[in-house]
Image 1 (cartoon, rainbow, N blue to C red):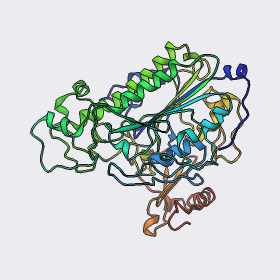
Image 2: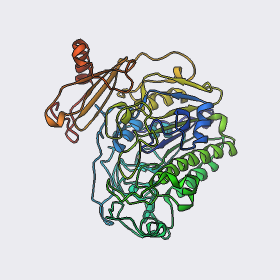
Image 3: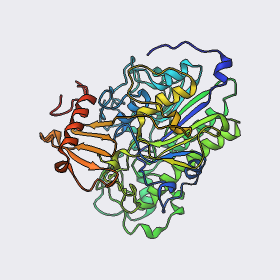
Image 4: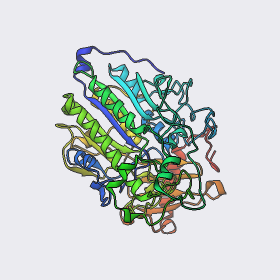
Length: 476
């Protein structure tokens, strides 16, 4: 971890606050302002009306941990340390917690802001290092931390414990049970589902309260950075039972039995809708806290998602049209796995009610925020500042955006996107899509444009650096 010289309190007080809200597996089409018709998201939609919506924004990766690494370090997955999910333990109650730890020498957005005099807080789901590792949030620039350190633990919204800094916080009325179960036939009653697959304390409610509490303690004398990484709507399908009543019973003709992982649920569509509506309520609570504390006008609010929607756990992405016109889901480098909601709200600076199709990604958050607060970003990042675009000015000159995961590569350059999907099978053939004419990636035009395939192949080679921990088959 690098140390940055603290600036004066007077200068710090003039800096904008930053609140970065990230959902988990929220699809591009699962919010009202992007076409969702079944699930109300009034707080998110209002933020979009009051700010700018980037309609072609890529998450850091199509899965959780590497996406968060890109967001916090400004390095794309061809150069970032964490490039895939990596587990430190198994699924039992006493297994070690955590994923591959972010190394101490990596410079995070939180470290930069802390060095500029900011109070820093992370709440929600971490996924970049377990207890007592160098990847722990408190060792990566966050003064305060509350939530799930381990992504596996976050598969259950009724866990036995969360973490406050380096201390376990035991949750009242929650006994351990596996977050992955399967039944052969429906249970006899709704109450039996609740007894088996819920607990007493819903973790998300505690996280929301923690965020509101953190904001309420802030003053105008010192700016603050809140990174709120909600675990919602990542499965399992779990939500307090009374929140299902907002959605029609007719939606669910049959229960989910656990066939695609996670726990069964008697009303899976209603549960998923209630989870997304719950995330909107989290956003509303944070925005209300900013207004109540007098921070509304001087706070940059960013709302996004770590990757596209899931196919697992009983989620019916077709019923909710979770990706609109896009192809692919979580885990895929097609647009549906990568393109996510992205809303930026900063009254008086970011124009209201605007949408923009600038090619952008998670690596751009760090340099953009650095420019807005007057900090110099690390010289080895891959992102570029979107400050001018987001304040109604020019679009930055960008040659390409790159992503990789396991045996997949994707690179977008202008209207062209190259995709490799089968490197693990020894196949490095590239599909090519014209995203202007074919946003749904339905037609591979590689044979029609061999010169473009060759050019993108060269860009991919330039973008990727070998990794011993996360090797790319056929390439490393």
